[in-house]
Image (tube, rainbow, N blue to C red; front, side):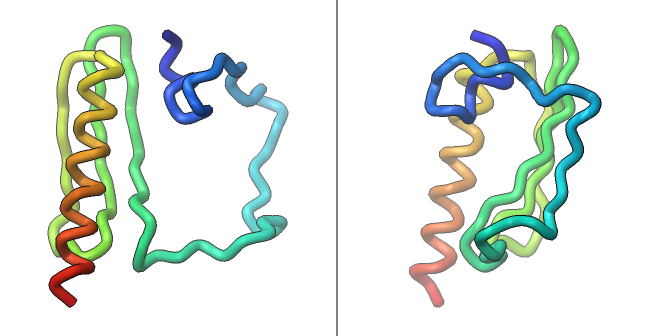
Length: 90
């Protein structure tokens, strides 16, 4: 499975072309920072580096691991669980 297919409902999609620009000002929904995990993924052929802003977690998680889709999904689900715990504690 191609890495960019992970977040499209497990369906194949093509990455955005270099000529397509993201215009965040045209978004129809507001970003809810208190309930949204924001993750940045640096990918190479062998290793992936993932950094995130997780609501309710003071530190900013950073993980490096072998390039495996399953590991990435486990990591994101774990961070999602931490977010849920932090919200429940409030």
